[in-house]
Length: 494
Image (tube, rainbow, N blue to C red; front, side, top):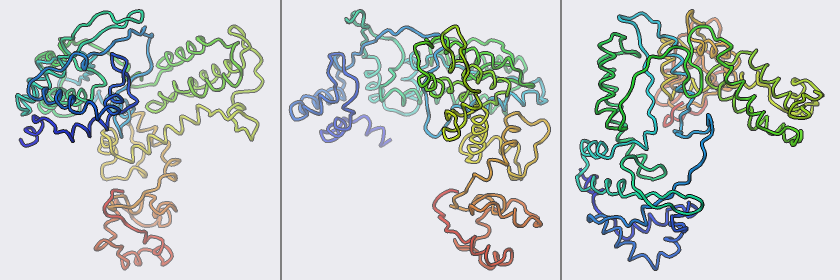
């Protein structure tokens, strides 16, 4: 309650000055051509009193001046199938969601009453369609004061827009819903509104436990009514429509499939690279320019796939042939003379190549990266795989179970190559004493192969925050015991 009351109070002059001076001076200009942050900071001594009066007036119920809430819109022609998109979260990876989706699809045939159903939700232009009435209602339910809600409402519904047409502003208009991207307040408001959706979904899946809900008609109808009701319709101002889908389907640009990995799943990837090459005028590019485009532009397409799905070798060879043809082409319609094979191109400069990385090697590196990220266990997908495949067992000694997913099989196939490159920094002592490489000299199990070893955390070999020397001497010779006594920082995680 104290925080809510504090939010409703206006700032003092020192707080206002701190905010103004912390604004980025190299930001975009306002509608009048001035950089607002740079102007306020440069003229602070002159406008200090006037600016404070304007802000104080706002917190006492006054309106925001139109000039301060106006923005311009520049119409940019849309590109077909754009590749760039945002929405990044620090410490997370978009491929984690793809890996989780693939694991879910793999288990969709698991026997259950009524069968299983998978639901894919797509929030289309959620920032632009967020209902103001819905947002005010949610703020009230979260306990914000009416005065604070009114201030937020003033911020979001007092925005004016003008379209730049032929270099001139074509009048002003206001929107009726949505929050502006780039506004520091918008992400927080959207998260609060989205929290209502998340809690509603949690309620649904608490009634239908597990990764799936039952495929019975009544349960699907219940999910539909919940999403198309106030939970969804009021949030984005649009009724949700259900469509029946089938496998394979695309999720975040990656094909999600079940069963055999068919070559046709990657036809779109190959065609996308072919179209990209066709957009360039080859005869105007030098060999160095083509090589730069291959490494910095074309390689991005298969690498994005490799981080979540293993591309068949046949497809990788097709892609490398496209790269090689583009590199040595004499014109847009001629293949030219290929002065060396692609394998030679991928060799180091010192070996007579051009130091281009082989896609087959990159795919192996991506597989190792997945294994490294799995060990961190900081995301939902890694925790889910630990609980599914590694119950009461260490991942490094697990055999590949029958019927496991393609992702888990890929991780297990690269495990023996990746493990020697893993090194644990000891903190609270939760990593495995025998099976994890925390001495940088390999696993302790490798030198004690005749021991019967289960899962044993390092902290079990410590006493009062230090190593249990007597216990270690009973297990190892003195030279190994001395190596084991590394420093332990109990304040950090392993």
